[in-house]
Every structure is written in structure tokens, then in C-alpha cells.
Amino acid sequence: MIRLTWVQPEDLVGHELRQAAEDGRGALPEVAAVGDRWHAAGGHDAPPRAGASPGPASVELRALAEGLLDELAAIPSPLPEPSELDEIVASCPDWPALRPQARPLIRPEAGRVRGAWWGRAAGCLLGKPVEKIPREGIRAIAEATGNWPIRGWFTAKGLPPEIAERWPWNRRSAGTSLAENIDGVPEDDDLNYALLALAVLERHGRDFTTEDVARTWLDTLPAGRVFTAERAAYRNLLTGLEPPVTAVHRNPFREWIGALIRADVYGWANPGDPATAAAWAWRDARLSHTANGIYGAMFAAAMCAQALVAGGAGEVIEAGLSVVPPGSRLAGAVLQAVADAAAEPDFERVADRLHARHGHLHWVHTVNNAALLAAALVHGAGDFAATVGAAVAGGWDTDSAAATAGSIAGALAGGVPERWTTRDRLASSLPGFDGVSIESLAARTLALGEEDRR
Image (cartoon, rainbow, N blue to C red; front, side, top):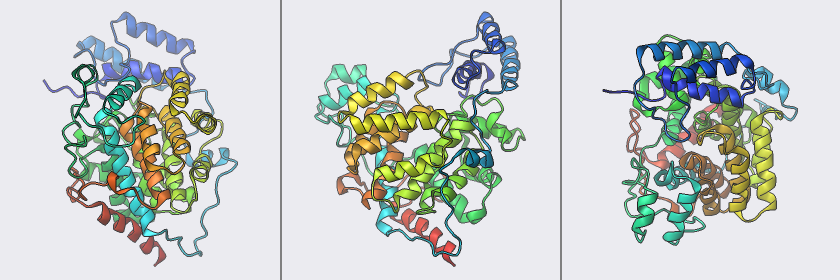
């Protein structure tokens, strides 16, 4: 029996109840009543780290789940966290000015774009083998192999059997992402989405729409390569729903990290223009996300745009926060994380504070990972290894957080140290991209700016 996770109604109710607790609906009596009915019928809660459910549901339980999901969807969040772009802009007092169209495009040094692509690939690759392993296990592995604080690729060489048994590698990544077997950049959704964004811009230009993003998904993105919010949105597209309904219909993952990991290219195509980068990221994110899920994408895109012209991480984070509603959960989490990382040189203590505040969130939620990303950038202070190492040591979405951290750190430095590069070949299941070189991707990204100047 083939049973996909992230789409079955009985798998979604627990996650939607958890989402309700996070977006201000949890204390409402009608939400509590839904939870009582669900648990009384034998429905399960959301698993904290894995996507799998206990097993297939009965016809009756599935029907109940469908009805409860629709009931929950009809209850609005009371929090002032808008999802429409005009409302987001209006809520941001420091929203950056758009780049004047008459002004020549700021062309970054090619090294910054190359550094961003290589940094994203390296950060992703570093985090892949320990994805889903908690902080305790990541540190145990790194210490046992002489890699603590994390400053290089993970390795199984010299790893004591008792640690290997207690903290097994991510089974999908161990064969391609350890120091002893890395041969080019393996496929990952954190990299596939960067390729997709590039394809959207090459096909549709600066005026692309959310519908263009959706068509590109359906044309090129295998359904088995999407997860959580993206899988829900993909399912919704196939049933005939259109954006932005695709982001909300039976999609309890709409504030998770998926949109954030899709945003870098929108920043790289708008050097020094975080406002446009954020607006483009919004067009993409609204296909599958709302509120803080969208803010995460806008935050990342704005930082990536500024990283191509900025002098340091502080300037980059400031640009990212300028496009995020200051009263949102994401803005508050990032500001606290930045303050912690600036005051505390021991990143383990910073991570302790992050987990104390956000440990209740799912490990792939946007808010906790955005806070970790910002803290890693401050802690790294321009050092590539320190930045991506901190992002991984935080122990949440290791490959995603480190990919974006590496993208920004690589751009700021104008490149990554040679030991963080691999054979220049990126694997992908997207048509036309399997085996593509990072160097060619950087050149194509720069060409987007050249096209804008014509």
C-alpha cells in the first residue's frame, strides 16, 4: 500500500490543532471543542519530528478529519499578521525604498553571486547527514570525530559504534554527504527550489506571477520531491484550487519553512534592492504559505539581496527585518536571537535560549529556524565555517538553515573557502538541471541582471 504523508486528512488534524495553538486560536472554545471531538474519536496528535502517522484511518475517522479541518479553517486567527502584500508593506514602518527604475542596476561582483550559490550548496550539504538528529546527537557525533565546534564536513570515520547506533545518520543522505563520499552536490529540495526560482525568472521575467510559479511546479517539479506545505499546495493545485486558496485549504504547514528555502534567487536577482526581492518572494510564497511562512520568505530574500552589496551581517539582518511586520512572531523571535548572539560568544548558550523560547515549535517551522539563521549570521561574523556550523549545531532544520546561512555568508565574503567546494556538479530531478554546474548557475543568475539593464 502506498500511503503518502502530509496529505491524509487524519494526519493533518493534529497539525492544524498545533497551528491553532501557535496563531492565537488555541484558547478559543470552538477550537478546544474540535480537539475534544478528535481525541474522543481516537485521532492522534501531530508527531514532533517525523511526518509518518500511526497508520491508515478508518473511513469514519477520515470523514471526521475532513469535517474538522474545514471547521478549523473557518476560525480566523486573531493575531495582526497579514498575508496580503499591501497590508504587509503598510505594517512595516521601515519598508525600504524601491530601487529607482531609471538608475542603472547595481551589478555585484561575480564573486558574490558565485559565493552565494556555493555557500547555499555547502551549507545544505553540511546539514544533510544530521537532518532530524537533535542537538544532543549532533554534538555527540561532532565531538567524537574531532569536529566540535563544527568546522568541516561530518564523517563516519572514527565514530564510536555506540554513538553511531544511538544517533544514526539521515538515511537518505549518508551515502552522499559525508566527507568520505562527497562527489559533487547531491539533490535536495533546498537546492531544487533555487533552481525552480531561476527557471521562473528565465521563463517569465520580472513580472512573473504566483500562477507562473504554480505552472512551473506542475511542469517540472516531481510530486515526490515536495513535502509539508508544498505537498499540500501541490495537491490543491491538482484538485483545481487556485492561489492563494492553495495555501490554506487543508494545509496546516503554511507557516513552516518551505517558502523561506525558495527565496534566495529572488534576492540575488535584485542586488541592493530588498523591497523588490521581498515582493517577488511574496509572489512565490503565497502559493503555499501565509503570515509567518510568507514573512520567512520575504526575510530571506531581502537578506540575500542586501548580502550582494553589504559590508556585514548586521546590515543584512536589518534589511531582512525591514520587510517583516514588526509585531509578528517572526520579527520578535529574530530580534531576540540577534540580541542573544551579540551578547553571548558561546553559541551553545545562544542555542539553549533559542530552544527554551521556541522548542515547542515543530523542527521545520519558520519562526524558530529564522531566529536560528539570524543568530548564526551574527555569531559567524563573516566566518563561513562558524556561520554554517552554528546553523547546523542549532539542531532544527539543519540543511535548510545552513543553506540560507551559507548563501548569505558566501555572498558577504565574495566566495567560500576551497575546502567547502566539491566537484562542480549538482544533481537534480528537475528537467534540464541534473548535472548542472554551480558556476553556470551563477552566470545565469548574473544574466538576469544583464537582461534587466537592456
